[in-house]
Image (cartoon, rainbow, N blue to C red; front, top):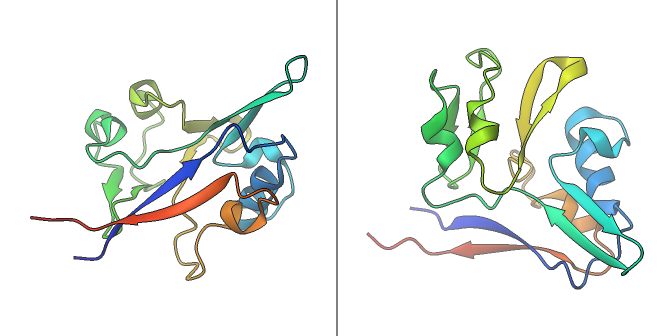
Length: 144
């Protein structure tokens, strides 16, 4: 079994530039619009603090368990994927996510979440484009 991949964000290293959100939006939607990204950078400029909301790729994903139509599935990397064709837009997955990492795009009437840039052998673009290495990708060996 391949190692399970996990995305790790370091809020203390983040400088709020949103290179990660732009890279994500371009990779998935073809547009440099942070609102289309599968992660969100929250800014507190008064304190110069930043927080990154992103999918933790949980070992036992509550979003997956909450989906009533099996529109969400787990791939070999341990990443939950959403099948648009099966999704009924009920929002149960978003409500179940403890990390606020499942997003509804109203203008497209669909839910999105991080898929670790599935199909990109080099890994997630948010990791590649973060200038301060606040986004990292790890791999955990699975023991059975």
